[in-house]
Image 1 (cartoon, rainbow, N blue to C red):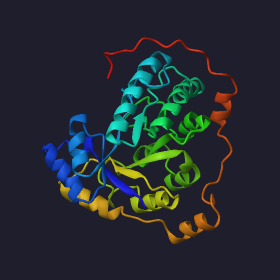
Image 2 (spheres, rainbow, N blue to C red; image 1 turned 180 degrees about the vertical axis):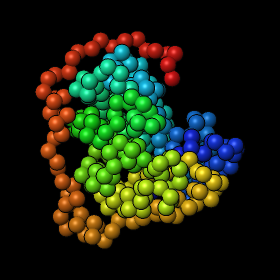
Image 3 (cartoon, rainbow, N blue to C red; image 1 turned 60 degrees about the vertical axis):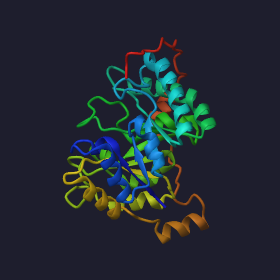
Length: 299
């Protein structure tokens, strides 16, 4: 059964105290919280909530597609893996970086290189590292990992259950739509999910073009039992908004999906042919790069 998390940054814009935000999420029935600042992790744990995600490295714009950032990213990720183990954080979020002048083919090679290096560490720590899919049209101009096919090309060659994608339905609705079909076809590569209404990144209700109960049902029917992050900016009072979305999106796997998985394991997991971008990226070995010194000034 799916578990639900509220996302910290979305709830800091109405002037509520930190304790009031935590109270609102907990009283609405959420089991976890994402991206809360580190000084709150002990309180999150004390309240019996799961600290679900935090960033593996900074920043979104300077990411794994740039070889000059590799050494910094690796160092930061090692530190965050240690913290994730200590605080029982199951998932760390990483980023491709902005596109700039880098081709898709070169970016995939560079991202593959970093993910290969962190995969064994993530496996030992039993922490999942997810590469986030973000839209490059509205919120993150020029972000490179802005399509599902590109993201799959980055994580699929690693062949690790600890290297996955963060599928954000809000961002991918903006970039490509076809959410439910994409979830069913690619869910083996998805290690975490986010939802929010579009347009506006507000409450996932009937005023939005995404029908979130159906999207959540599609996620549940794949057999996913992890967290889904409610990463939206409430248009009204936070406590009421969280209660509404937690209730509206509380789904269980359909009987049909459950029967198919039990009778014919893998029935919902078609193995698609490798996307063209994977074939192109893997046709030549990754260029050797010399790690640079950590950039301690970048966050």
